[in-house]
Image 1: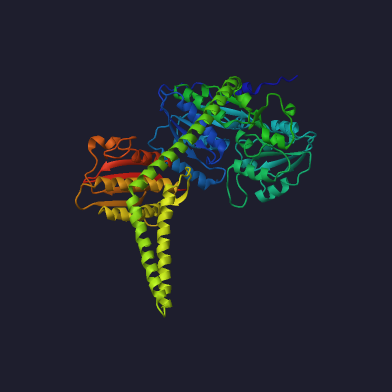
Image 2: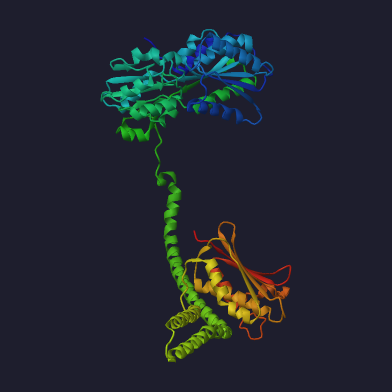
Length: 613
């Protein structure tokens, strides 16, 4: 009768046999760790292992461990010359750096460390990782070594393959040569026993182009067992996870994997090693050795591979959860909202009823506010219309003067034409010239009436795409006669090109007209030098800026903050609503307006409006 010995007891027994007795623990040891990796750390597995190790070492703040790292890159380079260069490099680099513990990741790394230790790090303890129990037994008699021993047999991979492929009869082995493997190096020796009764398609060590071609044409009841490809066989190297994605792109059968990061790149799953857990185990062993324990007396940690599976690949290959090995963990499955936040969801559903009532109330309030805003815009338009009528009354003499000029010319030309027609031989060419003059003067009078009608028309607030430069030009032309009658010089400086905005042209004309008329009124007591300057310019890249400045006495400093208040005026006959309406109009256009006194005298009014997108 034979009794099966558990793996953990077997590993502890191996360590007890390999480590000679009589070694005393070091009382003082340098708190520095040299991490030697078999890979070049480009792949996610080695990166996660290193992260787990560093996390465990950093968990104890009082430890203050210094970590040095070297990537031996043994998966891509080898030979006596290369190994000798590595030894020289490490010897020179760490000549003056005391090392407390060496962490060796991978069987080939451990072999080199044991070979070099007598010369480079005599007496320094070693913590190994990623070493299978069978590989550990082959090392022979070693001193001052402990570590993490993994159990990820090919038998487990075959078991996972049978779970995902009912009636499995063919196994396809894909990976680099076994002697270049780290995690699955021992699988090569397990093939005969693990695959008994199955057909084996061996693609180990083949070029990536050949592998991709073969896996696209596999028989139905077959599964791929992937151990890791690090090169296309034609001079290009990459991490095993990258090669996994290239393989999954072409494979017509599910791919069984033995390392957790390979799930995300297309593996359906299997008995997998979790790199962060292995790294954390190694880190805790390092801390024990740094604290003074003899490495050879610290029992190794056995890390079993766990059954992990990819939910998305399970859906692709129609694999049910019930067919998976007992204790399987499914990754990459997005849990439902209710699964993630059960109690929070219940609270949300309870709150929805309250929120529904609140939303209905807010919608009702929004409707009322919308109606109020519409009513406010109507009242603003009516008040603005009243203001325009009042301003038009103040400018009536200007309108009359501007109409008298073309009407007087029309009358004079008509009388002249009448006299020519009474002559015995009327000059028809002169008659034609007179008719052309009459037509031109009629158009001038019509334009004056059109502008006045447009200014006085009661229209609702309506935005359209307009050019502020054009609006300014029309207002200054409109007020030119009034300014001349008041002995005021108008100057307009406009920005080059167009200043396109979204706005109501009539109401913006009213704002500019109110500001210019106020400036002319403010200079009524000045005997000469009456000047109003209008400017348009870009303010940054998103605003148009308008300014109206005059050469008057300015605004009293104690009144400057009140000029836009309703019914505030300094005129004897003013209503005090012009500037208040101007501010209301500018705010309705999402702009800003303000007044200030100029350092050289006179007042200046400014407003900005957003440019059209």
